[in-house]
Length: 124
Image 1 (cartoon, one colour):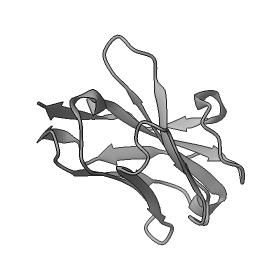
Image 2 (spheres, one colour):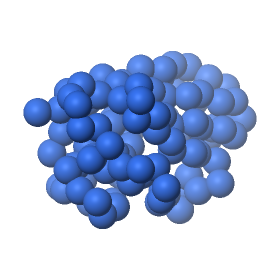
Image 3 (tube, one colour):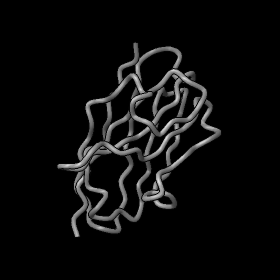
Image 4 (cartoon, one colour):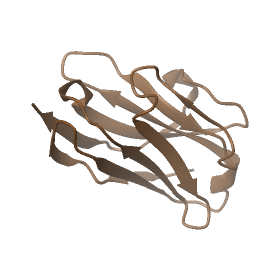
């Protein structure tokens, strides 16, 4: 069982930055692929970024590549999402997710564990 708690959301102007954090419970954090998804009002949940257990490999959605960076600190059981050059279309609830896997996935159905979400609002 893995419990995930996100933090770091808030209101920021376009062009600004935020760093989201996701703290995980459990002793085998490095065995989990971690990911960030987001859901805007009236839209389906969409993939943002994912990272392998070791942190050596990452994969991003086209819409955020070059602006967002996913990373993890296995000693702290925490995964991060650094978001730079934010745009109004990045406004959404951001969710952290975990899958017991060594393979990266962008499909939300693969991820078994989810956090409660944190709101990110980007004003124009």
